[in-house]
Image 1 (cartoon, rainbow, N blue to C red):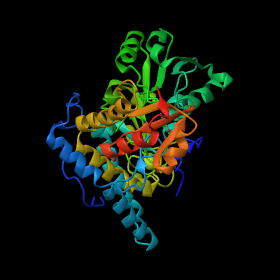
Image 2: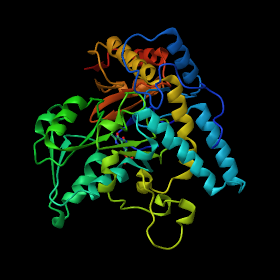
Image 3: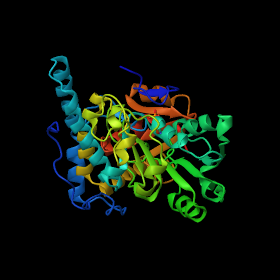
Length: 401
Ligand SMILES: Cc1ncc(COP(=O)(O)O)c(C=O)c1O
């Protein structure tokens, strides 16, 4: 068995039918998006039934509280991937058929974050999509970031700042002081909506309001947010999201959203055949003929990863936005209450654990991770109250705020 606590490990570890599972859209999801129904509060019986059906699709052999590192595949995604592997092995896979998987993933993600699919580009990693935004900055641009943010949000800007001809500067401010650090010279604020290290939430209302006053663009990394925290991607200039955590996809799926009026400002620096207006007639020769919409920023897809993307997004959609949010917070707060910690608004809980805690977790096969010297636990649709209680039992007396 692999160790349950990934102490010190690097962050990134580890139309096909969608078989089985929770079917259909959830009541309360609004047409064209999931964002109309985000109020907190108690879960109703019907919501608990949907959560129960979703939880039944997971098959972890550990008490898996580590979605912030990588999400688990629900049965429907696992089965779709098995079928795709079989087709590949048998020489029956068709390259063009993966376009349907990408299209379904793009459309489902667009619904999840409340934008039109024509404003969603796909890629393989968050950093490569942040890199596209960074490479498009005008000379002399000033970038504001949050201290200690995940480096995929930071490094692409620092790379540009390292090019003398570009005269780009990057500064940082503490997450809770980001909005007040915005000034009229700030070109873009780049920040994670939820911090990878400890689950802290960015104050999006304050940041968006400050940036509206100065004409500053906002790039939000939704990798640790989309899937549990309701987010309206259309509020900000750009969002990037890696799909392998809270969106329960294999590694190799990522999304960029762009506000429509900013499409022409972004340079498709990595455009290849997949960004072509008509992909399969864009595979040879000039001239440049890219898609009109955000598809022009598409990076060629990691085919098999996309097979697992849409079924997982379908499961999340079937559970419903409000329900996922309320469930994650219910479990996180059950843990906090049981461990004597203050209540939280995040699905990621970061605690100070003593030296014995990792060993106790391994013994109890409770999977979490260590980030920034603290124990990080995450709570998602694969989890139940029984998981929380097993973690509490393993950690009793060994954690504090
Ligand atoms: C906030 C955030 N962004 C991005 C990533 C992943 O980045 P990439 O897809 O570039 O590996 C992570 C991984 O932990 C993350 O926490």
